[in-house]
Length: 115
Image 1: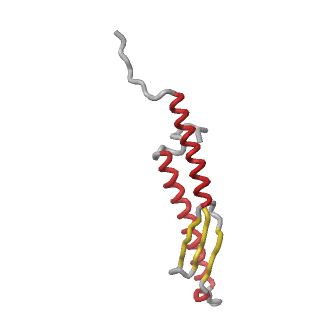
Image 2: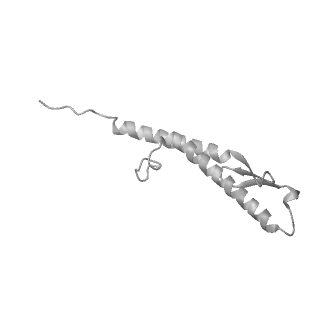
Image 3: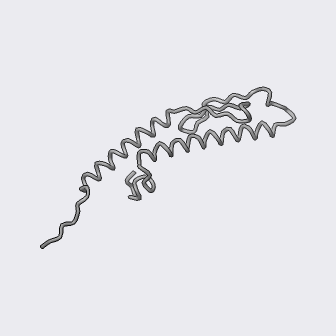
């Protein structure tokens, strides 16, 4: 008597699922790149608009923060704002992609070249 092993999804099924996941990820990536984020720093004294490609689209600086004798503070606030903007884009993108991959270890579930 032969023992029957439980059968999982076929290789074709897994490839179709992987292809669908890749298509979903490409669509989501395009959507994320088109998105814009509004970030503020220094209590709203510096406002930055960044897109999903991590490109600064617009920056507004309140004249109240511009002190010719204290350029360092202005530089620090701008740097903090840009860093926060980039972090926001990266965090949002990672969360959205994780929804698609289901938390697989790396994109493609550790299968080299899959994605």
